[in-house]
Image (cartoon, rainbow, N blue to C red; front, side, top):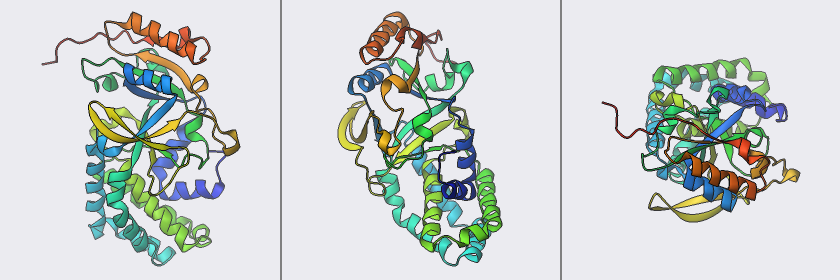
Length: 325
């Protein structure tokens, strides 16, 4: 985050401490991974674009409702919000109430108009096999692949896309409460800094704190996913680079926002073109790994990826023909 505005970094560290720590842990040598089907990988490579899917149409669409219910339960319990509300009121009167009011006003539109691109943190020891728990998210009839990508586009400080990445949290209720007790402590410790900011700016950061809580919080049983979400909302953050289209995905017609994978150095948007973005492709469990690998190598060569043969591996995981139990 060395390229970021110091004021933005400070605000993030105060109001979104878990997200701040997650972002700080991502280095330029880190990697993210996007698990998808082989068919969808070919669509990405052919069109040279990725899709932001409406949160209601994702495989885990219940996450938004889960998080919304949890956040509203918290907001409705004054015993749980009192410390943060009082600390913010002492810092600058009205910012807590105004931030919550804006959040509640926007909540229906956050549920319906949030579009998401999902990736996961990728470890070096997974570089040949991928992550078993994520392979298991696919149906037996689908051939799954994992596209390992460079992280540079995710950690740049740019508003060029009007799309913003953040780590997903897998809080228990206690962890959620502890997060906002920590926020209250950091607000109290940074009153002099916050007093220099406008009421509008502080109200907005309270709103954004709640927005990311409701769009990036999943059940704690899913923590092994280690997901990151890149969020956009055309009502909040209109973008000139994302364009709306309608596609049929898994037989369901739905709206998506498409991002052409084209660099724009003048707006600090680099590293998103496919030859430099793709680090590795891992083929999931299948009995057709050989021809699938050959086809992916040929497609990568076609779009200008250097030495594609070295970048495509088969996981070697056995294809299960029956369920456990």
